[in-house]
Amino acid sequence: MSLRQMEYLMTVVEEASFTRAADLLGVTQSALSHQIKALEREVGGPLLERLPRGVRLTPMGRAFLPHSELAVRSAGRAWRAAHAAADAEGGELHLATLHALAVGVLPAHFARWRRERPGMRLVLHEYATGEELRDAMDHGVADLAVGHRPKGWDGPVVSLGEEEVMVVVAPDDPLASREAVRLTDLADRDWVRCALEPVVDGRRFLDLACERAGFTPRTAVDTEHSSTAVAMAAAGLGILIAPAHAAARHTCATIPLDPPWRRELTAFSRVPLTGATAAFTTLLSEADLPSPGLR
Picture 1: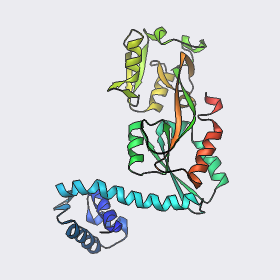
Picture 2 (picture 1 turned 135 degrees about the vertical axis):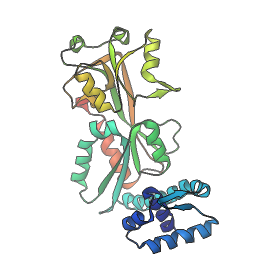
Picture 3 (picture 1 turned 120 degrees about the vertical axis):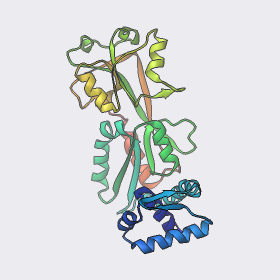
Picture 4 (picture 1 turned 135 degrees about the horizontal axis):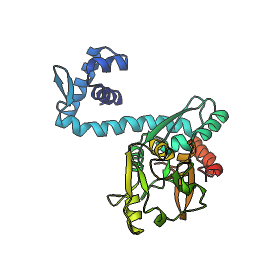
């Protein structure tokens, strides 16, 4: 079996159509069908069930597809790694990160990288949670990840600095003039909550922290994304706990917690850092993320 055949299978599954997959791959539908049938003969059974409208995976196909995806991505990553290791002109550097870091921290560093290496294309993969980011890196989606320190990671992990978690409020909120605030001072306030809050032992971290402080947070509004949560807090719907960099683009006030809440940011990879991955990690290390202006 070939990587091309596995890539063809992935595309048919993603598009749920031989016709759309053939158009996307730039091959004829008959050629695509021939390659899929050849793959099925080699595997020893049907991978796809042809339906009147579309296709779906057979049990054998569901078992085969994850390994096929890993093989195709690993091959692509091997090509990128070879070019990145040599800092090759015209190569690609694939980076994975959390959405909040992508919009709040990385743009300036991406811009500097492009000024210094205009011939190398950057490809950014964004994820909502640390679990999704780690899973993507396990499957070889990117050459380098930027996020919080992954537990039990086998590959290299480089510390980049810390992000400080702050209390976010509207500019005219009574808390806005405070130099710091204790969590116990917030027991009678309404909260803006975000679905992307860290989860510890199956529970949202803020619930655990407030429980230890002796109260249950009273939720005013639940949001899906951190940027929406900051906008809601800035409008006065409630208070929010969020990294300082997440609030930097909004008209709001941020107050440090006492004692401070900080989380380490890291760069991590599945393989030793060389060439472009090492250079990009050095660039971030020298910048002392997230940024002196946002600490």
